[in-house]
Image (tube, rainbow, N blue to C red; front, side):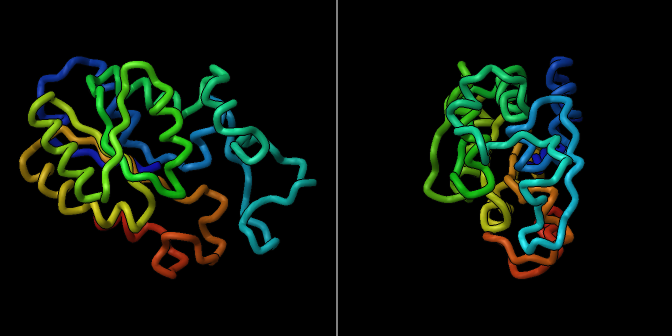
Length: 205
């Protein structure tokens, strides 16, 4: 996931927990890591199997994801995953409502957001609505957050994020993305624009 932050986070006098959260959230993380135990290492490399991931008999297996464990089991397991950490950090910085549009690359995170006590997930009909809802929420409550999916979602929410940026509003936009094994494989993935370079969306932000 690539969280995009309005620059006003660093300009306002907020509690130290917010600053700590921002340092964490400003880091780009992969979708696959939502189900990864904290401390696990992403040692997988693209292979020539046409799928951009390791075959089942490969020795390197440091990533634990939802392919073999049901999502609900992971969410309810209590394991310290990055998805759970993101959900808790949002609560700690004062977010109680997250505006979202489900998509392939953010579904696992949405499971963690739903399961987090004190966090309410609000579904929106499109990404621009989610972005402007988070904008209004930030104006009323101090900090807003929205979650969208890769490319089709990230590009659709751009105007709302640009508006929040221009108004110095504290708004967090978390955008799902392909897992790291898919980068550099030259494969066309769902929600891409047909190019092997997946960084176009990040450059727009």
